[in-house]
Image (cartoon, rainbow over all chains, first blue to last red; front, side):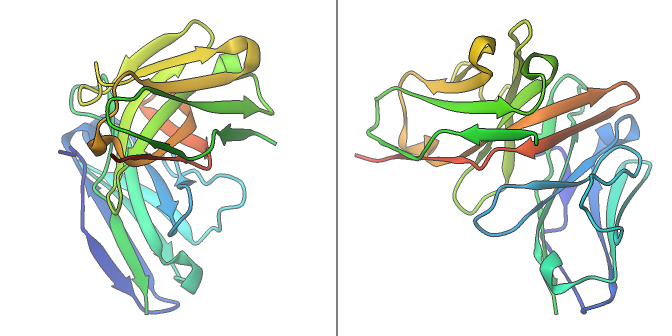
Length: 108
Length: 122
């Protein structure tokens, strides 16, 4: 079972803001990275480190962290942001890596 | 352009062996870790393990240790994931991805290969 827990599903109205959370003890010591996966496609990195976006990722995506919770925020959600989102970090031992359980984002 | 290109879909029978590949281009293949990730049908992402092609240092998730073998041939910039005896439960999409690890607690996977679908059925 994953050591990083995410809400299974969230919905957001077009143009509004949605926050996706990832909880786990390891997040007190390590940053999370975030991935977007659309149906039938490979995951794509959207946020890494403290709050870094790879080239080509819109600035409506941002990351933050507090205590044992990392968050991915989409400010002004677009229809194309509808996807599954996964966090990733070290596991609680710090020796291995683990993905979160995933959150399905629906844009209404 | 940094790219990881994976081998094509496979259909195998239980008990058969299999080796799938992931070829890197556009960067120094020996200077970055490569990770493997499983996604079973309709399920989430699972970290399987990583390899550093420069010296073949390999780490496995406890869930996959002994179940698969990760290797690399740096002369052809290719990483591999192999099974000696497949089970129906190995049916999944398998992704490779370049893995960054930085001091200060940062790690991330980018880019990802297109995935290899493995189907195990009698």
